[in-house]
Image (cartoon, rainbow, N blue to C red; front, side):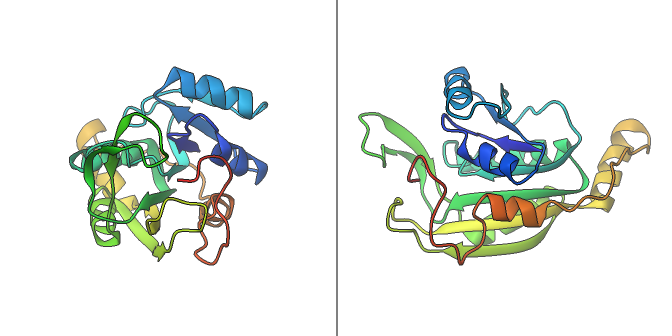
Length: 208
């Protein structure tokens, strides 16, 4: 499975690996990957665009605060790329800030740079994920912890639909679909990435 947008800390990738998952952290920034490898020795990282994923089909993909730095109009294309990379029956976990924001703002972490900041409502994430060929298994909203940016968080888990995948693949390759073994990763993905709404702390590193 992949941790899409692992960032310079790689802490979610490392947490997933510690729960026994075969995980690769990917990031478009070579510098982020360099720092993540330094921070998390023994954990695998690679430079890769999360909208042009190679190496599938994947059993699952985690997107832990990796949608906020791109315009919301790109969400359908991003989800389509993830759907193409995940095998039928594979798992998806998305964690995002809740809200309507979609534009350039002052760095919420207090830096000198201005950054792109996109937020999502639970309804729009559910609709977009379903439209990309997933079944939404659960969608939960929680309040920010004391050490986080003051914004509510949306946690969404989904499963890649079999029928959708077959239909899309049939048009592309003449009806032949290759599927892997039936493996449910959702519970371990959610536990490792802090998905439970009853959790009292966020993963270490950046207080996003």
